[in-house]
Each structure stands twice: as structure tokens, then as C-alpha cells.
Length: 327
Image 1 (tube, rainbow, N blue to C red):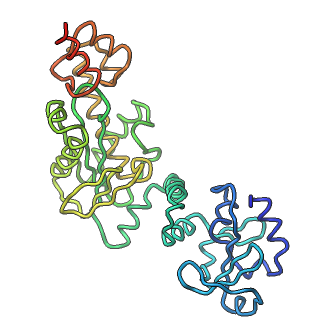
Image 2 (image 1 turned 180 degrees about the vertical axis):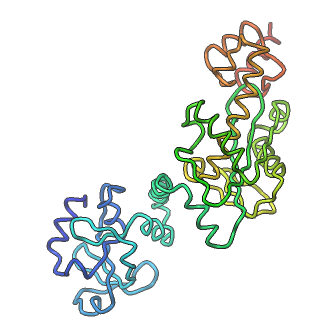
Image 3 (image 1 turned 90 degrees about the horizontal axis):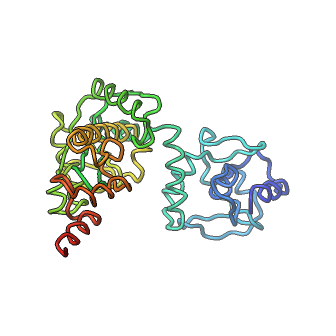
């Protein structure tokens, strides 16, 4: 059922609108998160539930639920503070839908859970930090890296601990910011942060251990370079084996203000290193490509060869070396 079909079905329901809450897939369809759903799941007070002359079955968690036509209703009544009103119906809001989907823990819901998380964090990028603060965690660090894809230079990671109620309007994944805005945010973060640590793993180590392992080394180095040890670390996607509790967040640089701050520090730090390298080797255009394999960069490798800072294990560089040996 799509949104229109759900609304038509609800009109035929003999229950008063105020006596139930629309939950589950129907709530997500009504809020434009899903296109359609099979059932219309409802929740009501036990006094309403007991009066319903509907068929009974066992629900997902072993609890009794009643069903009639496309409707399923349970007595797991949600607080009205967790609802929004759509066309006069009480509909479970996105935050509560997200928590419900997490609780149900269905494999098929993985995509919608990630989608909900991203939407909620786009409206409030302090959600992960607030949940930890509510548990009494005070020193929360965000960790992110930059430079996994370039052919030249180091991979750089940053670890940032922000003060309570830190707010920087527009702060997000550094790649989505202009260079001017990144530089501005860099200065503000460095000024306001409780602690900042940077980790730099050069191209030789990258060639030795591979970029995945080098990235983890850079992140651990950044954490160790903080002059204050965090109590919990939020990491963009990559899991780390540490003696500190961690949370790995897919697209964390978009969802967490602390990871976003680390993203900016790492990006600006590495970019400035590439500007310095560009002064020595302007023919490779590092000031514009930041070491990534653009056509101008690849053409320069063919014409001028490689420099010490190139990563020998990366395809275009190793291809050049192999071709040179074959000549």
C-alpha cells in the first residue's frame, strides 16, 4: 500500500483516530521514507485493545496482537510525545520509528535504518554525542581520516574532543565544504576544541602495510597524540581495536559533529602538505588534484616520472615502474 491507499484504508477503520497510533511501515510511508508497505500496524491502549473483536495471533516478540484485514494492532502504547499528526492521525515520529526498527532488528530493515539515521542526524548532528552524554560519558572524541585514494603523500587522521554544546553552523563532512569554509572551520575548531590529535602515516608505510592498515595506524596515532584521553571514540566507518570504547558509524562525518570536526582537521592538514609538495613539483598539479589520479597528474607521471612521495603500491605508479623496467 502506498500513502493514498493507507489513508483510504484508515478511513474505513471503525476506531476513533485518537484511540491509536500508526507505527511501523505505515508510519514510514506516511512520512515519505518508504514507498509502500503490506500492513498497517497500529498501537493502542489496553482498554481499547480489549474491546476489539478481532482475530488474535502471536507477534514478532511472542506477544499477542490482534488483526483484521490489513490492520494489526498491539497494546505496546507509545507516548504521544513520540508522534506527529498527519491528516488527523497520530503517527509515530521518525526518531521513535528508528528506535523501533533497531529494536526489531530485522535484516531487511538495514537500509531503512541507515536512511532514518542519516535523516535524523542531518537535523541534529549531536545525536550520538547526546546519547553518550546522557549515560555520563563526558570526553567524547571523533576520529576521521583523509587520503586513502591519492597516489602521493600520506594518509592523515585527526582526533577531536569538542566542549559541551559546541555548535558550528554548517559543519559537516569536510569534502562537502568549500576550501574557504574548511579553513575557517579549522581555525575555530583548533581554538575551541578541548583536545586535537593528528596522525600522519607516510607513503612508505602505506606501501609496506597497505592503505587499510595504514589508515588504522594513522587513527591510533591521532588518538595517542591527543593530550587528553577520551572516554569514548566515535569513528567514521572503520572499526578500531582500542582500550577505549568505540562506536563505528557509517557516514559518520555526516552524522556526528565530532567526526565532522575531525574530518575538517584531517583534510586541511593534508591539503596544506600537498600545497608544500606542489611548490617543489608544480608539474604534477598537486595544489589542485591533492595527489588524486587526475589526467594531468597521470600525464605528468608519464612525462616526468615519479617522485619519492608517490605510493609505489598504487596501480598507476606500479604500472609506470613495471613499464620502465620493461624498457
